[in-house]
Every structure is written in structure tokens, then in C-alpha cells.
Image (tube, rainbow, N blue to C red; front, side, top):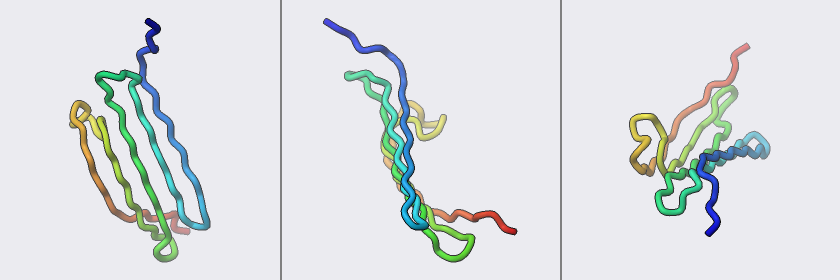
Length: 85
């Protein structure tokens, strides 16, 4: 029986379209029976000059050090302030 290597992997990608930014993060520990992976989706979009909105969805393990061993499912919203001249 062939075994897969034990380790961790994380891939992040972003796509820019007009003034919108879409992001995805995939994390996996490459274990089939005790998988502790995660998925994060994010979207930022312009609201007014120098202020953007932000939406993030997270599902999986390890969003923070406090819940590294617990699976979570969260949606967050907020604002992004860009550089002021």
C-alpha cells in the first residue's frame, strides 16, 4: 500500500476584475481520515473613493490559534481604507 506524504499545504489565489478583488485560500493536511483542511473565500469591492467593502467566508480548521483544533464556519463583513495622499 502506497502512503501519501504527511505534511501541510496552502494555496492562495486572487483575481482582479475592474475594481473588485476575489480571493480563495485552500488548506489541507493531506490526511484522509483526520483531515483538518480549510476554505476561505473573500471579495472586496469599491464603495466610495478610498473606501472599499469586504466580505469573507471561512469554513474549516485553524482560522485563529484559539480554534486551531475546532472546525468553524464564519462570515465576516467590513471596510478597507486605502492610502490617503
